[in-house]
Length: 291
Image 1: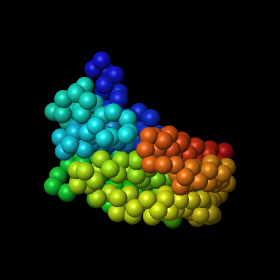
Image 2: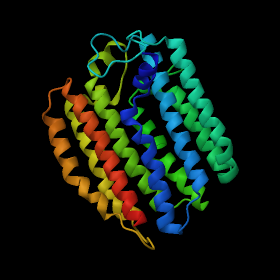
Image 3: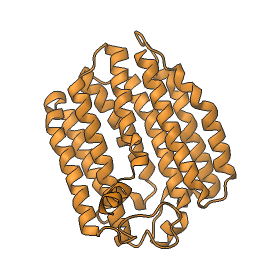
Image 4: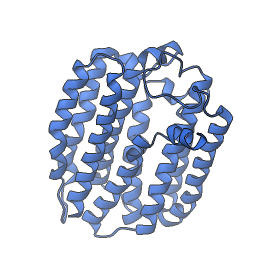
């Protein structure tokens, strides 16, 4: 029971959000510079997953303590609120994940220097501050900006830097594209949970923007990455970005579904589909860059 509870707390269905930026960053480095630093990419991949796991675990424990995962929650159950694991144990699990990311970061700093040191420090602090501290990021309209910055621009750009020792517009554009899609995932999550979030004093972007505004923001987050593809593909010696365009019809269909779906448990499916579009977009982009 304990093991399955830890798996539930880790939220494995969304772990691709921390894997794909590293994969795209490495693929872009190969397409532009013709080289990939294999050990550094592997360390970045595991470190990125550790940061996401730590964020998820810390979020599970702290949200329960703040009363945010009550009986009005329509999303999947959270282990701390359900009494499957204690908040102190879940927080210790988060600390282990953050410590593992920091240890891997020591090697990454040796490879990439001070920019990677700063990125690593800010990533871990922001992951803790997402639900920790006196003004948690998750309780403000800035949550989507957090994931765009760290699970998009930071992860793609950091991986690209580790492989090439420089950072160009294509890497920043690719990071922004993936970050926007990840921001769309969080927006769906927050829109689904507006009632429970408002009850505990959260002011997420979905609450501030309202239903209609949130729908338009979701559409922008989902469509903007396709507009960024020409910048990602500018001046590539080899490789292509056009395979990622194959996911555009899926994105349009999902926007239509988002606009039409009554808020509630149906958004659990929309959340899964948004994660899948981010994954497919990333895999097709990485494949096009490499092949």
